[in-house]
Length: 283
Image: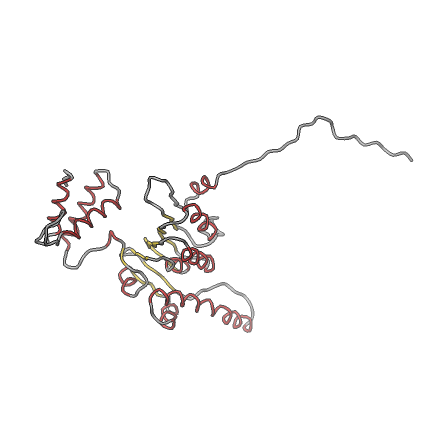
């Protein structure tokens, strides 16, 4: 028997070494569920949650705790605004994001733009300030899951998830100042809480700035403010700058000294118009 000589590796053959690198910033820009702006010339430090909470196994989408962590790292220390419109999803993903926001080294403002339901409502409770649109909703309920088994196993599962409901009720109670038992009753009946009711019940601190209308202003003045906002935005102002300017005029309208754009008669609309004339704007 002879030993068969096998061919060796060809000499001088180039080594194949292909590598790729994708910048995390590029991934964040590509991912539509993250809106994290860190431009130095911008005042916006916003994260947008406009998806289900956790990974969506049906579509491949979803806003996860990992993405929240990446967005917060990208923005760094300082104030952060989180805008929410989500039907909820994975409870533990929501709890993780709630904890991240509570631990963030800077003021966190939550804005409920449309819906913060289920797990998303837990995230909403993580803000130092919680604002909600007038027609928006919070929805709170007991956690639920799909299970299969005999009656003994089903009873055991019910006992196992009871602490989860208690933990969520504790979060709502901490925000509202109400007893945990009261929050548990709201969760038992799956409560839908509108914007104004959310403020009244302590789930939110205020309506969105754009929704605030002082008592007694009436429909005429509210319409005038909207027209003024449109005029300011048409002149090139951002929405936030326009609303800030209008708020300044409104707050100084009742100044008895007549300082700034104020009108000692308390006529807010007249004061705003007077201020706008200084900017040579018409509407």
